[in-house]
Structures are given as C-alpha cells and as structure tokens.
Length: 241
Image 1: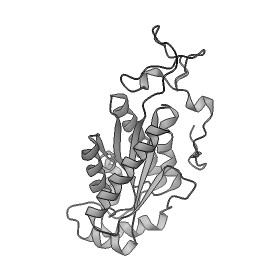
Image 2 (image 1 turned 180 degrees about the vertical axis):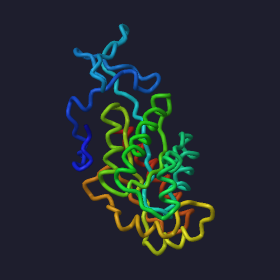
Image 3 (image 1 turned 60 degrees about the vertical axis):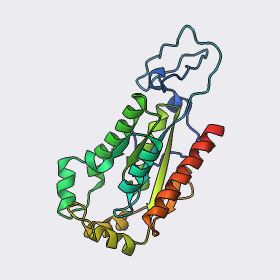
Image 4 (image 1 turned 90 degrees about the vertical axis):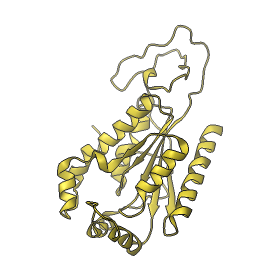
C-alpha cells in the first residue's frame, strides 16, 4: 500500500522491484529488451518476450507533463498550449473531480486529503492509459499543492521504465492570483479558494528534481513561451542522456 506520509524518492534511484515493467506498456514500435530474466509486471506476472528479439534496445521515452500550481496561475491555459504545440493529449484534472468535491469547492469548502486521494489516483491512471494507447506523451493539469499529492503521481514511472514525469510548477504572489481568479466567470473555484490553497501550499523543494518552476507574474504570452521552451529543453536532455 502506498503511504502518503512518506515522500517517494525523486533522485532517480528505484528498487529493482519497483522498476520492473510489463512489455505490454511499452510504446508502439519499441523493441522489447532481451534479458536472461523476463520482466515482471506490477501484478507479479511474467511478460512474454518476442522470439525474434535479439540484443538490447533502449526504449523510447514517453513523458507526462503535469502542470501544477494554485488557482489562478493559468494551469489550463499553459497545458492547452503545450498540448497543441506538442500534439499531445490533454487531461483537464478538474473534469475528473467527483461531484461531491465540486459541490464542496462551489460552496467555498476546501477539500481534505481524503477528498483528493481517489482523484489523484484517477489522474495518474488516466495518464498511463493514454500512454499505453500509443501517445508519445500527455499533458495533465492538477493543483498538486502538497508534496504527498505530487508523490501520488510520481508512482507512475515505477510501472513503466520508459515513462518520464515532469512537474511544471506555476507560481505568483497571492494578490496577483486573487485578482485573476476574481475576473473569472462561471467557474466553481472562487477567489476565496485562492487563500485556502495558499494556506496549505507546499512549494516544490530543491530535492524535487523533476520540477520546472515558472513565475507567471508576467504576461500570458511570456508564460506560454517560457513553458514551451523549458519543455523542449527537457525533451532534448532526455533524448541525449
């Protein structure tokens, strides 16, 4: 069982058990790895290797780009821009909240940890489902305000060694975000929710090496340009390493 009170290591070191994956989750056209021992899936079943497999082949990386940050930071706008620019499927995290969560937020009632666990797990599994369906990557939005929330999503690469997870953390002073949320119309996330989110916000630390941090105080044009530039840079780094 995953413990939400013990952050998962993000320094790239995983146990051999955690890194074992099934060949069925590999990207299309990726040649399976031929090894002495067959890979084991997360369900402890042995994956069948192709009889025509010879030698070793490095898998092609697939990326989960999780755009995160408190209300008003522009998560949806940035995520849609990345999705369109990179031609990747887009998952709007808010659309996966159960009705009970939406009702609470509409009434200005902050969500508890218990309200979020199933939601976070659904977002992680939906991202992996999109990748398993053949997507090169996926763009996901989720506030992920606490370290332990982010750690729920960090489980994803443990089951597919070719999946790389990146957080794009959007941040700005609270008064800037309050003003932006105040201009919204017909959105259940009211301005009063911004303060409640800041009260529990745990900004990513230097230890969280999978985070791209972007100040969104400037114009949206600048934010979109910076976000795409940073993503393209990470893709290059992943490809050459």
